[in-house]
Length: 170
Image (cartoon, rainbow, N blue to C red; front, side, top):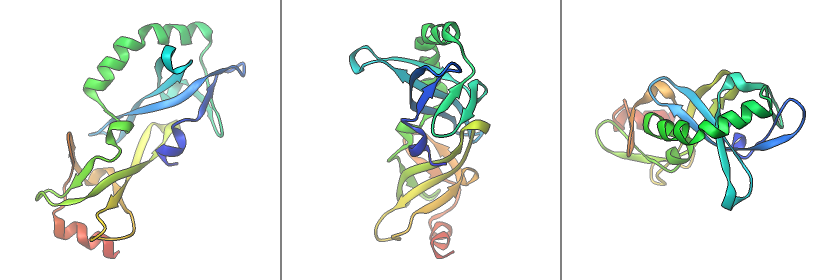
């Protein structure tokens, strides 16, 4: 599933009450894992957020059903400020990864991050979709997470520019 299809999905508890919507995903870049899923609830000016893991998810379809009761959700909301602060320091968020410039290991710009392929129930990040610069190709480049050297201000690939060009020809 594309991460963009997952973001905004309605989250409900086991009793069928709407809890909120998926707002963001935090990733562990070096492990190709989703570490936390951020759920937002309430109006924009009084928005509350809390983080869940794939273990909190009972079912994943058109809706996400959680295995959490009201008190467990309230506890997660109470812990959310410190949890989200730590997440931002130790992980990369989906929203900050989008549109990040992708460069080869020899410093040549390839394009920008367009989306991700994820498996939320298994907490996996499978692939990254890169929108290449127009002069390189019109079709998106699909990268495995193992193709990435590092993610900071830029997403740096392990491959050099010539190797990346050969990927467009496959």
